[in-house]
Image (cartoon, rainbow, N blue to C red):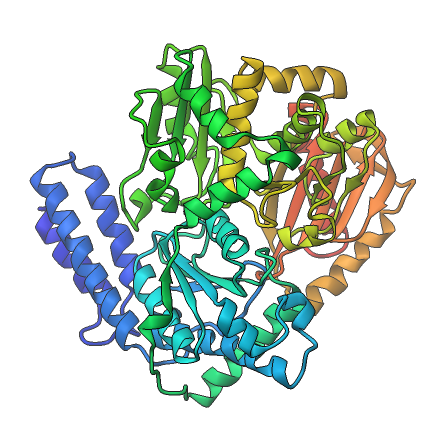
Length: 575
């Protein structure tokens, strides 16, 4: 029966000898569903697995042979370029985008306007300092990385090749080997059909807008021209790079600033029989590092979930979501140890979410806890940085501790002005870094920080959170959104109608009047109400969607804020 189903699925999704007309990932998703419905190890399970392998062989052929332009025009944003494996990401297109980056560095010799944001003064300097290159667990990642390396070395650029690695460790490698830039083949938390191409400059952080705009412009010109220079790779320019070793060196160097003794924390974990840690890698790149991160010491108190290589992610959306956190929660609830830490990490390990087996703690709360911990328990002083769409829990703590808060628009690159000054930089989408560490979000630093909290205070994260909330108040953040019929300038023009909701305006929130006491407009419109609850409306930068971010002072209050946001959109004619 399964074999008949497989045959039908191949017939439905494939067009003979026509990659462009074949829906390989629609097929793979259905095959994963068949595999998941069969008992592991059964004949049906094996047949579905074999069929998935066959489908991926077709994807690999498309990656190797497709010379058509990407189906969606290349656009290089803060998190780089993302697209469908095979259809958008092929050896040909990835080589063109790599060549576009080379062209940007070559142009420094005639125009140094990008020298400051790139951190490099000439093409010769870029060649000598070189590039760190790596990839996550996506299908075809090593193939695409090898094409990038061929392009770079053909242009005399040294390559520090890290193979499969995480965003945080690659960022650390840029700093430790003093590379000119890094290229990471990852689409972060996007679904299984996506590939990605992430570029960081010499500061190891997300690239500035003028840099990503230049890469986009160069790539589109190369693709429109349809030609790329012939390759003459120089394998002597390729050096091995242990990205995790670079990360370890960086955290040791930064210890005087952030106060985290990495080796001491790991030793304390192994010496603490009352402590258990569960890490869900969701099949991503963190699985290649996690045991080494914990010192390669065998321990039944370090539990790794979904740590097998699987580019399908078992059919789930590979993000640190509440739904995906359930395995971690169930695992911790069955453990006898009193101190419990669970985390879930996305494929390139730049996002992380936490649990103590009782409650889930997202970055809205953990980032504020991290600031409080470094300030009050580690004795560090300095400001806290979080994006405007992130919980105001950190604002309340900063006010109580008489510290400043830096609150830029959404995007980790927006923290550049306070890198080296802010104790913690974090955003609600589960990204964090700390002073003395990388300017890139890094799940590993979040994990080590959470482990240190638990071991130092001998209490679970939820208990520590409760103590802070008792002093600074309870905050209940959430986010959502709606699809709309407008995009770009038309959407922005319509959203301008929200300006009528000014300071002093009284809103109906679940039948209760609430006055707007402050309006922040650096990224959409954030309206703060008299009880310090708030709602924020901003357009998506890439889709015809409007995103809502809300924060209530009670769990039940979130629905009223979401409803009020929809009323506003209806009143300006958007719904």
